[in-house]
Length: 270
Image (cartoon, rainbow, N blue to C red):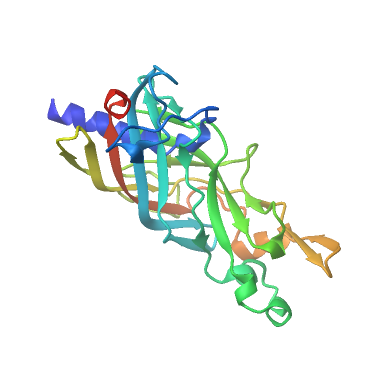
């Protein structure tokens, strides 16, 4: 029975990672004290089909795509509610926080345009990556299929520089178990979280690790360098050649260290 409960809780953890893909509801109730941190989970009045409220934090890790390896240094918070059938739902307070991760090498490392340093200076060329959801997630036997896109943020690149999109997402199949990637990648193994339960009815799953090194990444799109303030030039080709994109399955990797809290909706919304 204990193993079964742990399996169900790990499934709930997997589910919360995908919250932001579900369209938020127009209204958002706030849970009562001390459960305010679960804001984002629909109340029974908003959605009576939610069976558990979740709050997860990706604390650290990395996301390697092509030749670029971005450390996860800014925690990412994921909040929402889970249906019995595994579908994922959030109200207007839920989803995935738009956490910026600093990309090593900045815009010059991304494009190879070293002359930008003389024109703008290194500080103005700091580059950030924000992971956004780009499709509907699915949950099967505790494993998460998660379509995403990566937004590359710096004014030099324009406002719409992405790797992946709604028509060609990066599809992660995250697991706490062992992967089976195509070569040249080798199998890597995640870590099941540590289970605990507190008197306030909150379930804690701490110090777990999700992994995936079997996904492919498409080329960049929407990256535009505007010269002299009015001459737009597409630099997708530069970004792709400098970053090793598109990159096939077996050449990319993500590791995500997480904590999760889960509570019944009737405790959060009595």
